[in-house]
Image (cartoon, rainbow, N blue to C red; front, side, top):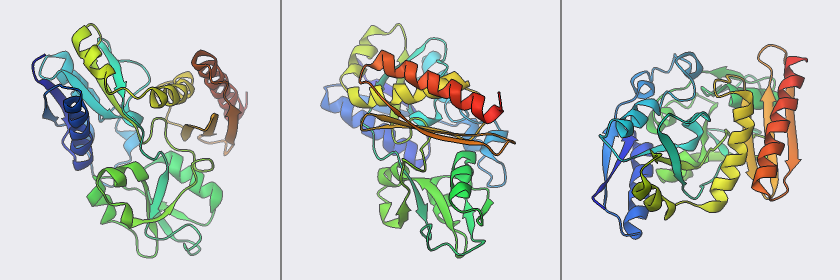
Length: 292
């Protein structure tokens, strides 16, 4: 096979993730090179523009997917949490790489060390809802930008919230003040995992990606994505789902009702059954927060 062209965003985190995929493919005997793509999400990184108001999930992936569909690249590498649950026409997820930590972390001060009224910066409605549940006194401000930009914006006496995996990728875990328990602060669907897409009819690429697909991660993330898919890919509610040690932890908050669902679902170990359990949990959670 000729050199596999890997489309990726140009941020430090995205490029490092894509290089890791390239290294894995090289270990399996495939040459690979990166193709850097500018995305709408990267072009609108102003800290005062909330992510959900400019397109939400998908704004960091669409242009990368187009590069594969129009032949400029062969595969697309994404943070799985950015990838909508509705597949793009003509593309399929050929691999989920082995997951890093799925947890969120505080950089600045730990939760217990934040004084009353302290400022926490995050652009995530999920993170705000979860931290507000734990500490009603906290104040929140928007946070956008690449990882290094975010780390430079820790409020005085406050904290920012960031995915542990993002810090692991860039070898910046020494910045962490506290890792938040993912059973309580349920992560975003797919957080900590990298998804690799290719054209759905390209058998050679699908075979190549099989060599780097991590079965356990694929199973866990597929169950999480089933929870989100039932809510709808365009869901803008604070939502999280995380599989760990045979359990699915879920979180959903109402947009205006103030109702929160935080639940743990025992999984059977059968992927089809567990995907169904995730979908049922999503329906029940949505009915609860919407007051139906």
